[in-house]
Image (cartoon, rainbow, N blue to C red; front, side):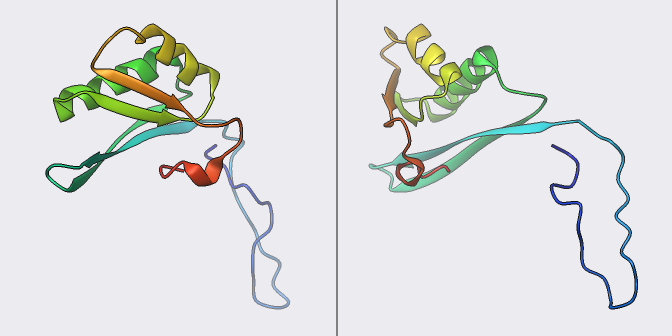
Length: 113
């Protein structure tokens, strides 16, 4: 969200702080992928920002863009977000993509988090 997450702030003693913000409900969502090339011993970072929320179509578009940039088969390690599972099912037979789903709650296993 593009509004402050906390309505409190710091101020010098005796001066009432004033936090001015509109009632904005805009949203900027981010998606990213870390690539690791074992042969070239290089890493890469791909990301995309979107106003609003990502859906399965936007995620699939991002996955295809990463694969085109890398120009090799790509393995994605994902949490179990429903949109991730949807994209994994859609691209299941395509040899350019492999999807590994993490256990139900495992934020420490996901390097991108």
